[in-house]
Image (cartoon, rainbow, N blue to C red; front, side):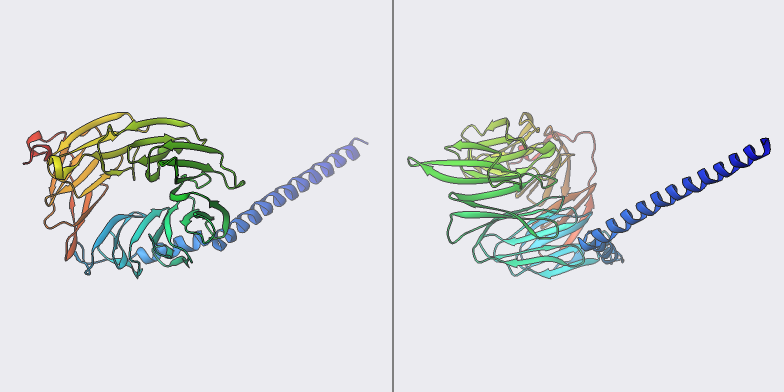
Length: 400
């Protein structure tokens, strides 16, 4: 009887082990199925496939810098997912770090504008009808609208928002997902000025303007894409919105002719900054926390004042510039100005830390510790050193 009981125990143990193996096998199979489904979904979205093709396209050695550049007027230089992009009045170019030309397309736009996020490059014809989204290896999306494009934005999550005219309304905003399927459309009775998407692309800010009793009245509306009704409306009476930009921490910056308003993704006015009656000369918040602005009328005063503001729009530093900068860029390390064939590098508290000669420079771009700049004939790069502090005499604030 004892032997029979022991045998039954052995059989039970074997059954238990077989059951555990079956459950484990089912779990592994399910995990593999989910993984395969995700893999094919990624390919269907073009994300994974495009990343592989972009990586292959980026391989190869160039002859190094400087590289000869085609003719044309450079509009901007930008970060093309770790490489260097150049937009001029006729073409879009991307170069890798050894100087190899990775991409060259003819856009054919009269007034080209650009946004670059998450490996995607948006180029559109402001005031025209054409728009396209590129990766480093291929065209992802192209469209020609019946009405002129006012503005467009691209989120790091892949969503695309386009403000475009309408034959029946003052304007409209169309939103596409990363597969370029339309997911939202808002029709406006006001003139749409600009549009901005949050980093993940799930919240959109739209600036519009109308007149009330002869006075300009701008409004910033925030939208989620499950309702045509805005989740918040922020009136900016008497102000004209110049631009909407996305800042760190889920903030939107509404830059007007009179100041800056920081708005949370929930529609709360987080902070505001007044220009104090000074005209806005330039601004940038393309990298790092906060925003940099230049104020003043150089033609009248022969100087401009540059300010760095933190994300709550508090002044971190300022400096008077007695040469007229042709470029203003702001990132996590500092602020950069191009003037008189030199790039002046400031900290975010507006202390000068480096001055770099850039002969015949038309446009410049900082990437890490490398400064890239274009002339009428070439694109070159130089290293940017970051000493503790250079003498103030080297600052453009002391130039005559």
